[in-house]
Amino acid sequence: MKLWQKDIEVSRIVDDFTVGRDREMDLFLAEADVLGSLAHTRMLHAIGLMSAEDLALVQKGLKEIYREIEAGRFVIEDGVEDVHSQVEFLLTQRVGEAGKRIHSGRSRNDQVLVDLKIFLRRRVYDMAVKARSLFDRLQSLSERYKEVLMPGYTHLQIAMPSSFGLWFGAYAESLVDDMQLLLAAYKVCNRNPLGSAAGYGSSFPLNRTMTTELLGFDSMNYNVVYAQMGRGKSERIVAQGMSAVAATLARLAMDNCLFMNQNFGFVSYPAQLTTGSSIMPHKKNPDVWELIRGKCNLIQGLPNQIAMMTVNLPVGYHRDLQLLKEVLFPAIRELESCLEMAEYMLSNIIVKEDILNDKKYDYLFSVEVVNNMVLAGVPFRDAYKRVGLDIEHGRFVPSKEVHHTHEGSIGNLCNPQIAALMDEVMRQFDIGRVEAAEKELLAE
Image (tube, rainbow, N blue to C red; front, side, top):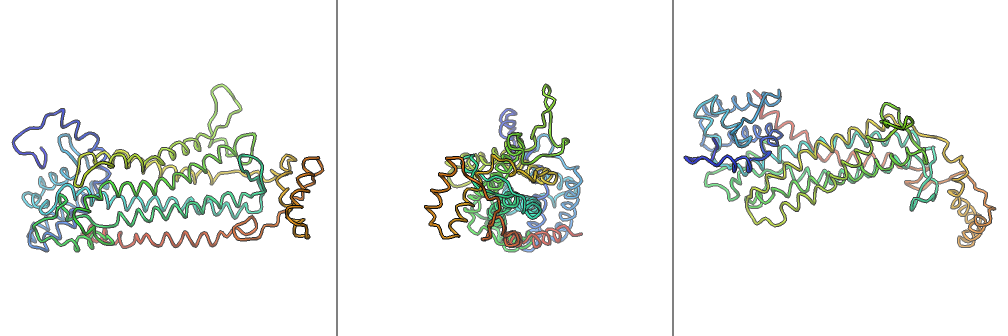
């Protein structure tokens, strides 16, 4: 039985096709659905659409369902269309007629919208926390290895001296910029669409400000038509934030794969973190980093995948939007896993500390020799030409001392300043207010 069903049974083949994987995906939203109903029913009581007795029954029943969800005992039964239906049917079985009143003034359209906003703001924050943890690991490694030089490359050709401090620190700062996009996604998700009903509001005197405050949202999506238009847009913006993080991770993974290669040999990992070959006994393969690279490359395509699902939809709700959950929810889990694995691998990285002793890296120091001549008074172009001719004629003798002192260089990594930037971004998530609101809704 479905919430909208009357006296005509829907064809089973149509039902199977239209429901698809929605029951499976809706389990992600179960906790958020109960939170939305807890706030909505308190508002219904406040405007006179639910008695105090019914409110008490409904609140108690919803909190019981929430605890079952937390304990992993909640299921969406066969024949039940979605999480909203399952919660309402379950509640009505337990508390009777009062359970039938919880849908007044809302539609499944704004139910799923508020569920998504509650779910996504939490998961975006969780991703930010995991990215921050990786950031801290990278900064720690940057400080630890700031004196250890390594080759820098352009065009995959030996270019200039770099350092492991620079390399680790570069990816840390990249995550700061990525976090700005996650913060933007969090702010978009932290606006309340509840009360927009099917997209055109309600003749009931709903108090949308009340539900906004009860659910800990920063503000509401005011225009009810726009609230519905936000379906798909919110998901795309979240995906764009995820794509930025994934791009950083994919590039970090590629560097690790490259630097583990014996032709580079800059870093290695304990044997238990690599895999072997069925035929070559010497192999220690970077499978973890390769999978991080592959998964994150797929995630970088997520914004476009979501955009293509919504690009030609006119105003209002359309069933196409259901499919967004199938591409976004698993991708969230994948990105969280990649962040965790990247930090785990880096916590075990082994850095080679004498790389530049190899004569093939002598030319890395050509710019250092040019700069030393310039500091001694030789015009830059003359110094450049002289060193170039020495290299061509085999007369070049490197000076392997590196004196980089400007901001962000080998000798001045600016890691404290970069950490301050990350701290400032993290402060703006303001998750404490959300957690306090949710805790108050669930209080007995």
